[in-house]
Image (tube, rainbow, N blue to C red; front, side, top):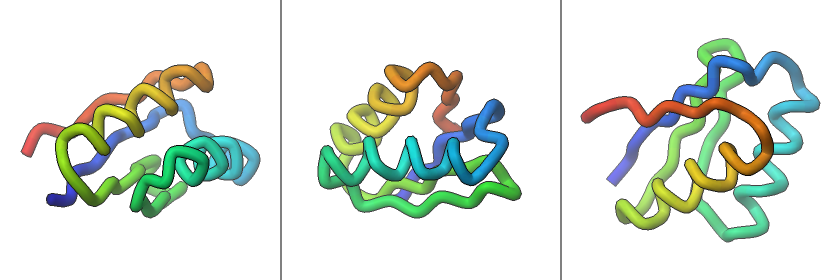
Length: 67
């Protein structure tokens, strides 16, 4: 399953690097698109929730796009 998380306050490559590092650490399968401010997560619902929690813990305000 592939789901998207919108991160409206992801503004620069530094933000991308911070999110990427956190998601790599939890071994998430993801892709980040800075221009659309989205993080695409592949996997089960638990992977989506773990990615959301990591992004939130970094101080961002993520929102899961409804399928």
